[in-house]
Image 1 (tube, chains in turn yellow, brown):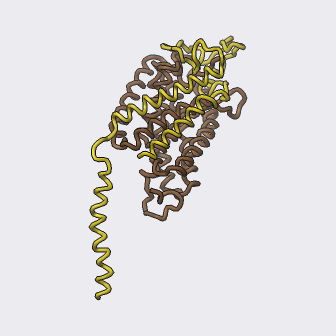
Image 2 (cartoon, chains in turn brown, blue):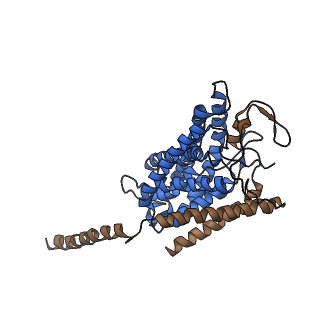
Image 3 (cartoon, one colour):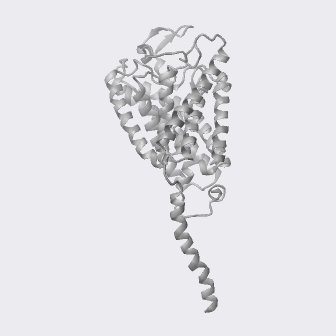
Length: 139
Length: 238
């Protein structure tokens, strides 16, 4: 159990490094979905649709947006810091929400039940097993 | 220059179809909570939290693919299914999508059901079917494990992408002249390449975990070989 928590802590550090540092080296091109939706339209330097017909032209504003929208910190001009910090916050938030929820709904009670169940017949089985050789020896 | 939207944005699919998929996603997630509770013990709960956080992190890492100007990123279905199982894994991916939609403005809130259906439901279900099949036929070695991770990731990404094409067929907002083959084609080809990247990331991650802590790989615990064969590199540790 302790080592499990050590593993989780180590893994979390890796995730924080990926989201906080490596994220700045990510490709800024549209992903597979986005680029498929842009097929058929032309775009200017500011990424605004200039013509044509494509699914992306129906795109509407996000309902919430918020200070971390588009994986940045609004108001923070340094791109590297903005992306990295938003990534770190996202990893911590995701871990807190997911880990917290899973911890709350986890199965409780006497944990190693299967091992106990497996243990007793196993112990029962060792007795005949150890008596078997003596039995054959006697015979 | 902030084109970092990775998931279905508002307006792409019409409201009624989005609502239907929200109901589908909600029902599927409720089932996952019920079934996932059986798997969630003191050991799996923190591990599942880590898997969700890790998927969030790696989804930020868009990598370039075959054609100039197009990138891809991890969806995470196969990774989650391998490490924490299909039920809890689907919940992990769903939590990531909810956080992204509510806090990071990525993927419309009204589109959440569509995104969850594609990546958390279809992506995980397909991945776990492939995992269950391959782990039974492949040798229980690191090579067998990485092939399982790679193939399940590749297949699940392509099928999840086809989930979007189906949704677009049902409720796409731009009239493509009734012909979705163009959209289906670009989605399939780009996600075939993204699937290769997803496969490499998934295999690397799963093999790394399996080397350090094989007992933390759900698929290895749950999918024991039919005959208790020697299990050279993996099974014996715990």
